[in-house]
Length: 358
Image (cartoon, rainbow, N blue to C red; front, side, top):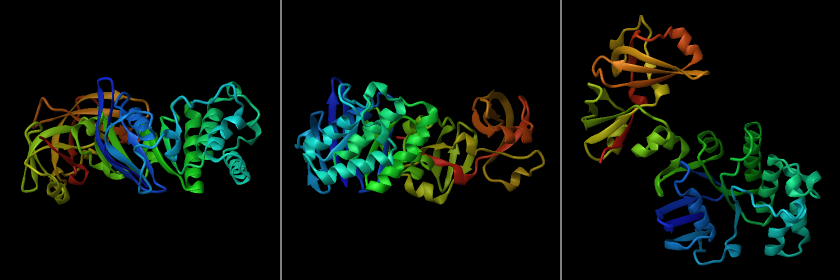
């Protein structure tokens, strides 16, 4: 297990505020956040490339905070991959392994197994400048694993690979993790990549760990306004929570919410939110009284995004408010949506989330 306890660091005027995190053995944990949020700085601090201002780093219960980089037992794949241009593929792979392990027949057999697992055994004599982006990526991963480390830090590892190869590499890293019992700590700004590769997830914004939990919990219940906005959620409205109902003045309506939500929120001032793809448009012949949290209104604008449509809906209860609705092309055609059309929508309580509004 990799554990961070109140870890903080800085570079120039930028500061990483105290981070506490546990990544269990064999787990894949993704730190997700926008570019410039301090994710790389955090990885470099864990690796020992940056000075620590405060806190502690433990690996398998052993304090490694003061250990030099090469003795931490952590592998690293930087964003630029950092392959040695003057060494061929095999020598690049052997470099880290031989520093840690020296000449070792068993280790050589392990490397043979690794190169076969990622299908680069035919590239061992090739120089890095003769490799494709995907091949370079696989070599960098093998080099990190070949060092014998069971914990890998990966910094935006697939950002330079074209779209057609990225998903193949995602599948490959998951297979390697399972086969060799690896613990992964990966950073990315790509939502799809994060959800595919992670077991657990943290959201890191402006040097602060905003939220950390199972990935589905992060997705369904953003803990802060910054997290919700990072996920692209625009349907956020100020309200007052009382007796299981949020009075959302910005929408001019009262919203019943799930009982588990108001038990978890301390204080009465909240932000109530819903994802655009979870707003339900009622059929023209539907009875709104049979649905929860319904409101009538009008379609103000429609944004055509190719495979999907964003419908901007103005509720009759709040003419200056907007509820954003996301529809796939099939649903859009079936519902016969057009600008100016009168609709009723349901904000189902199971799809709502609350954020404490401090």
